[in-house]
Length: 535
Image 1: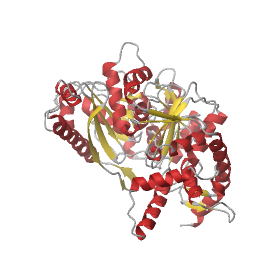
Image 2 (image 1 turned 60 degrees about the vertical axis):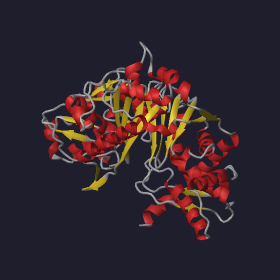
Image 3 (image 1 turned 135 degrees about the vertical axis):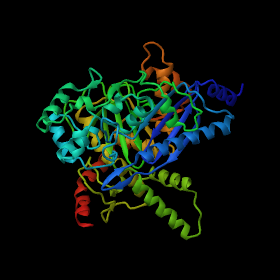
Image 4 (image 1 turned 180 degrees about the horizontal axis):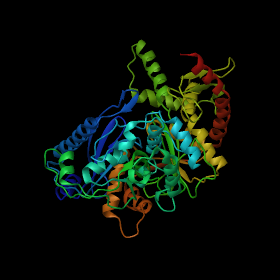
């Protein structure tokens, strides 16, 4: 039987598993077969909007986008296999991390959805970090709730439930108010020992707001916490119609706990075991490192979250990565086209990235900052992209490209140094995925040099979070008794299908990056002057 016939049979028999992820610019659906391999996909492009200084998506955007994405998947299945989707083995949903969706007792949205992108909760973030002695980032649900309280917003008195985008979709499709533990760890801090919200911090929060005399306690507002492998409800009749208005999809399909994009990224890159991690490098950059034990100190550069199984994860999140690098590549493209030379974009990126490997280990004295926006890791509320050099620096194309690749990792490196040097965290290897790693070898070699840890890239890394949440749904459905998520991924998913290329750190690259980083840190005063004076 051909692979196509096998896949068609799996879909016809209702054994395929569906994962859907709400990313910041795209909603993506991936259907997987019995070997966890993607067999069909669908997508819907969408964009957040700034309304009354709040980055948001409307409820209409969410449901229209989800239905269009699912329709696109059905169309792909019919085109490839000639069969409809009537039943599925399991479904999983994930969404962009955290944010704030607030509802009253009738299930009415009280204020527009506040996404992770909003930086309007600094006061709450600082006060909760101080009260909990635990870093609370601005994008977390609890920071948004506390900021609304500090602002005296009237909707807070009417609250019955707060959740994230993934939690909202799960609730509407199953009737269950729950989150997977990875996503829940960005709603409110998790106690790693119990796998539930930290009870001491719950008590502290209730004490903080006691004088307001609200009719709720914070634990009554938050979704329940579930771990990977548990069943988090089934698709209801109403939910099936919401997902597939055509009525072809049947109700009763089991659903896994909803997760955030950080958790699905860890799953899709096989980075859920302790001493592993992953770096996602595109428009922004973040690293997730799975810890063997909790950190000694509170660091405002590091967010403490969990894997979908509940292991402690240190997250270092930089707001800027490849935007400035891409802008320079576009300039070179424009230059070539001025001479009537048509350049293939992928070839241009490949050529310029590879040129960087010919440069001096420390970039020959050149310096750049890729700050399109603010960068909290280095203390900037706004950004100004900059390129700077001394008159005697070695200014050539190789060093220029190497500098821009180095600086795209610069802010992340300052956060990772806290983990690896101060906290003495042990890492066996880190998985790279995202645009920085598309050109073979280059981004991987530079990242390995920057962090001093082997970096691997897998052929499946491009599948992304929708595949990751589909894998979590499949794990719920297909795991054996006592089989951990890490074991399941190693033996059932990645053993057969991921071609992996591992690159060890090169001593010259490590020394070169350290020299560059000294220059980078000394030059932050130049970036500060640019932000203050270039309006």
